Length: 502
Ligand SMILES: [Zn+2]
Image (cartoon, rainbow, N blue to C red; front, top):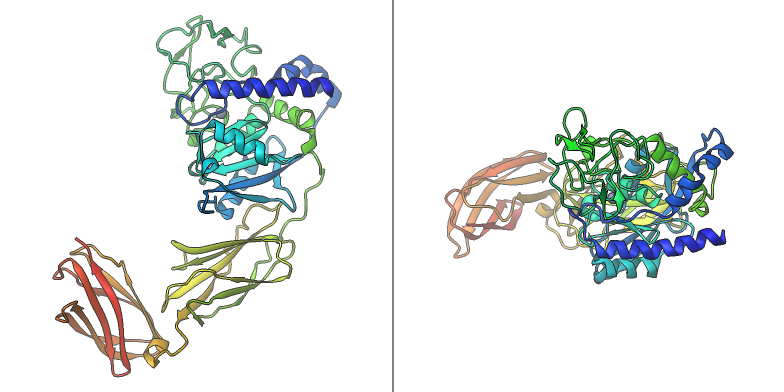
């Protein structure tokens, strides 16, 4: 153990120097260097394998997500996005029988620091060393990880928000680095080369991998079941999931790089696997260098997929005071991580409010919305439920609550019975505005548009039926400027401001 720790300390220093010395060529992955643990691994690989025998165990890896925002506490990676990213990563790690889960009690840690939120490598080093927690993967999500999509360094991984969307393989790639895997094109990072020429036999003293397999254990990523790869930039693949570019090895044998490996630089659509030797290395890394991660041998309890969150209030188009809204729901069994979402429409695009809650005290959870909701609107809400282990949403659709906002103090009959919203607003000159109206009863009246001098620009009769309806308002004749839109009836008048742009 003592020897191993010493080696690791030196390794981290070397790795730090390598990362800082070389800026990435394409700014996709900032990980440089090779884990010195690999030297130890290749020296003992056969005995380790013989010792372990057939190894079909599932390995469960704890992780804390460090959500980094700016000094004002804005810009955190949303909790539902983080859960989706871990869920997708777990799918990619199924063939390796490795699964990631969040540390109970510390699934998320929030940091407000602009120089970490958008950092250079010095800022990244400071961030990692000030916050790294023991016995887990420390996964930081920031806006700008030193100009990269992500990197693995100093026994932590750092991801960029913009490279963490659905379908992105950055997280799986960086966790691969964290568990010892180099790029299959290792040695070529940041190296300019005319690929129409036979590759050199060495780059900076490191041997270049040949097609005949003669040096596959001491060149490239040092795995023999990943073929040579020299491509150090993001590339698209052909229909055979290989590089379109024909590469020449040092013996001038031609080949195409394998686009299927998560650890290469082929675009996400081409990738889909770790090789068996890569998987064996990652698992051995977990048994040795990162054995402190292996704390549980059985899955934790998940949330039953057939039980959904019961929304208590407001539901069924209940009227609520627009600037004082509280959502209440019954937490399902084993739930611990909740994200409340409020949307303008049933599909929650756009979502106008989100709030996350971890481990509330009660099974009946109430969340007060600390933001003023749009007045006179029908709004939709739902709750995404997870726990530290169960990071994927159930395949079934989630229950959706509907409510209407209103100023309940001192409202008129018309305000209580009719909500309307102009979309879009402001609007470009010459396009049609849509008036979305929700009426609780039939109503006859008139729609009038006045300019700010009080002149009538548009006026037409309205016949509203009970329920939701959309009315088109022609704005072709309106010059750029502000207008007052009035909905008049014998029950009163409602007004809205309409802005016509250039
Ligand atoms: Zn990488």
